[in-house]
Image (cartoon, rainbow, N blue to C red; front, side, top):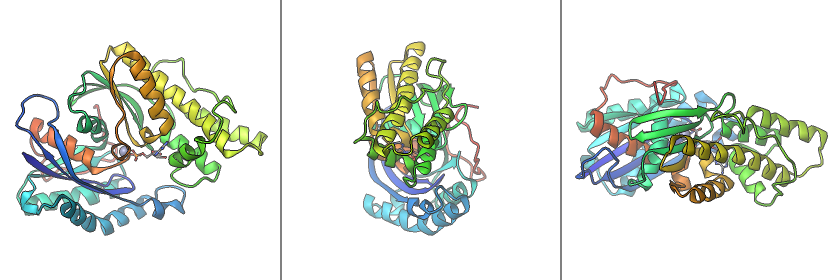
Length: 341
Ligand code: KG4
Ligand code: ZN
């Protein structure tokens, strides 16, 4: 058994998790794991009045919260530091100041506790959310990673071996949700607000364009966002429910269509969702329908493992430690860290 403590502080969630893994099994996959704690302290309320994440405010808030969140995770896991075998932290991509808070704390803890440190790529963490809940999912797999900063289709050949099949040429899907919500004055973050309003709206009320839907595996959401803004200017009386449902349907149409296209082009045996936008109700429903109609293995992760959390960082960290060994204590943070170099 290996018990790993992980920190996630790349954006606006301060999260600490404790994961216990049964790593007695051999193989390239991830070991079955038990999440003993996954504490997430969100800064959403702090950033809401600015309409988005303010990087300097985020770093300070991480610094203020981290010690308490670590304490709460250890308490929830009912474990003391002598029971921790390794410490992981997100080392990129993300906001540099925010990343440095987590990386520095993780290295200090590893040094003090005499255990290895592992720097983890945040996007690889999102991929590992799938293995956390379904370690035996069939490979190769296509994962649609959709967050506030990224939109990409990743071909997971095996853990550690990835190819980017497509990505956004402009806004990320979450960014489009956030910008439309901001224009409509729905608050921040916009995705959950649009999701809630859409539940009572007519998805066919407005036929918005489906950006690049017939073209390959790349995405474009900027035109869809502009189409919503232009429509509201011309029809100020339109209600937010219908608008949200119609916009959400357009985004989901594109995401699901391209994910299934990637599955058929690669011959993948499974598919999964990851990232904050994967918490979207309509995307979850439509993706599950499409994957099950295609007869492939699939996973719609729990919402808690879609949005930023440290359990997924612990899962990726455990695998990295086993496959490549510890990260040196001179390892820094890289705001532009890529999944595939
Ligand atoms: O992965 P994440 O927590 O942070 C990043 O790494 O970016 O994703 C945050 C993004 C935000 O843009 C937020 O609006 C979006 O995920 N999001 C949603 C939903 N919940 C969060 N978008 C659509 N529907 C949701 N239910
Ligand atoms: Zn994320």
